Length: 130
Image 1 (cartoon, one colour):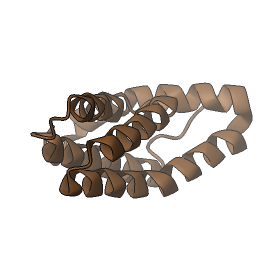
Image 2 (image 1 turned 90 degrees about the vertical axis):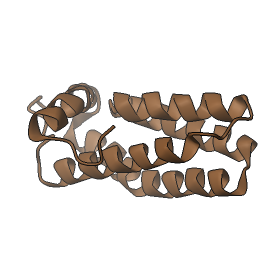
Image 3 (image 1 turned 45 degrees about the horizontal axis):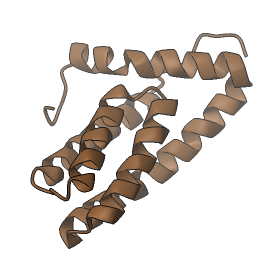
Image 4 (image 1 turned 45 degrees about the vertical axis):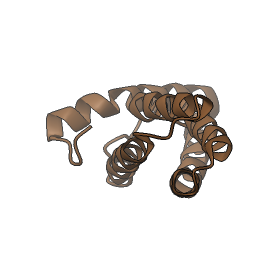
């Protein structure tokens, strides 16, 4: 997971997000989708920080809990890459092996940052009817 994705890599990585947001817009209307994204954008940095803290403290139980939360939330908004990384973190934590956890956390932070910037620039705007 490179620190900065090329434009085409970012487009490909965000296709599932666009698809998920389009589905949410169809099911909940534009306001519902935007409410879900607002919560996701607000809570996820805190979740990533909690994951980093768990890694730094060597707390596998807390890491498993925080990674599981992030896995679910990222699945709702279609962030497959974050979901997969969070799953790996959760598996590391359950195996009581935190080796390699920090790079996974940093990869999650990087993908989240790219996605949030793309969303704020309107690159993930849904075209589905509200």
